[in-house]
Length: 367
Image 1 (cartoon, rainbow, N blue to C red):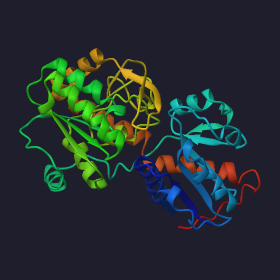
Image 2 (cartoon, rainbow, N blue to C red):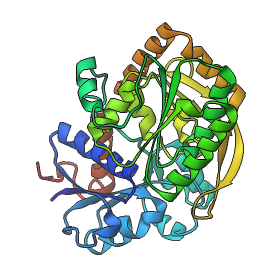
Image 3 (cartoon, rainbow, N blue to C red):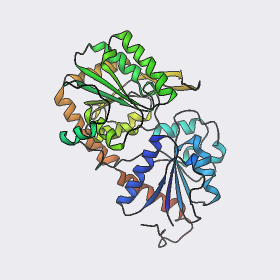
Image 4 (spheres, rainbow, N blue to C red):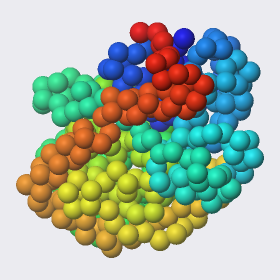
């Protein structure tokens, strides 16, 4: 009997799956993690195995329907940050659907999923890995990342598949309002149509506002160690996301003792402690069209409030340090992967075994 974690194609979902796998390892269990479930129909699954499907509701066929032919022990752990157009009827037949945030829960309910079957289990991270780095170690990890020459600039960082969905245009507008003399805005994005198309719009906006030279893009895939280094390089992680099912980079940044600035209206605000781990600014509803021509419904941060939040952090070194320390403490207490794994293991026993087995009968997972 094994625990198998299937992750959909998106990098963030694989990180989510790996976090759970690491947490299970810390409590003495081994899980087999398979990325890109859409591209791998031959994953070895037996009838005794427990499958945890990690991804979006759009990945329902790969994360539930396909493994359902091999085992009945499936726990979907899905996000929904927009319309749920398909599979609602089938989802409603489940005893339980797991999701990562209250925001996702509300979205599922809005589109017809029964609230009583939805349970929230947030994502977890290994805070032994996501941590502050000593300067010497940081320098080694940064040497192969294409960065500009740094001269004590204040570094703001946004990370995602594309910048705009993470609020990059709002950040650019807000930074331009401040007339800061010595800062760098780093954007780590993917080499995708949305990432590259939105980059052009962001650069055009920055040029119009006079801060183009302060933008620097890091494009493509990098190792987890290099991503860790980027978080440590930054002074502030700022991502007032327009839509967000959880916000994994937000908690990774906080674990690295970085204050985080985000906005209301998405799941990212749920992981923050406003005024303690950073700032959460107001937002308004907003829709835009992505590179595929799909209309995305989300929010847009209030740029005046965002500018004021950035200013508070930019000019107060002691505040940044204090918020960063409080942020790491918060993540270790609430989002450590071992804690999340223990919660999931309890759900496995409760949902899949307690109803059909005596209390003394426990699943014998591989270690």
